[in-house]
Image (tube, rainbow, N blue to C red; front, side):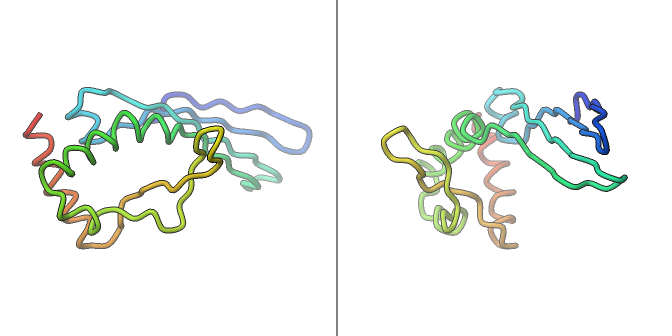
Length: 126
């Protein structure tokens, strides 16, 4: 849900910044509300020349993804490998470890169908 967009004129370009709030069935089931983000576009000669997406992945993971995964580990642990991957995804770790693996959803048709069914089961259990 887009919340606010504004344009900042500059010499030969302008910058458009949009803030938004994000939610999904997991956040609604948990009663966690929204997580905010921001997208910034640099526009030069009428075309987007740069884009920056600022989204608090750590907050989303902690508040929304981790509770779903904990529920999954308790109720359907055999499905974990079918639903998640960490291959090629890194996120900032703590000060001592640098980067660490970030587990992300598989986007196969099969995994998406499983996520849909498990999301309904997760929400009903709340």
